[in-house]
Length: 182
Image (cartoon, one colour):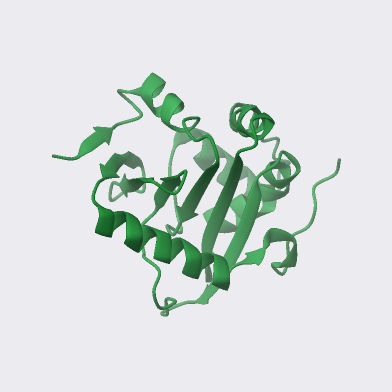
């Protein structure tokens, strides 16, 4: 039976999971829209041209804590082009996270296509040994994380990670990314 964490019910366990790695964390993001009240407001501000003031301090403090121990966090973001408003907003705020220590990379994909040998679902890979698949509701809200077990499952996700890293470009090489003011 799979182990599940539902952030709305298991906030402490979810937070602990996101800081559980000692060497590496890979976050693979394939969804084009994510929904929660904070990000929905940020997208509305972005679309209206209003200033966005994301701090991401909660996320950056986790990354800094792990980095002090020698651990690296990598995000691989699939961007279907033309990108959704959500994706445009997210990519616009990524420089904050890069300055905070995350290694963010992008795979641009023309609409109606998908790269061979990489999945369409989000997942985390912790220390190259623990796989968590992210699940979303029809309204793009986060439903929970499911731990996947088995040697073949791990091997498949490691192959997907390697393929995604091969296809991805560093954030600063993705067209249209402008550094945020220091």
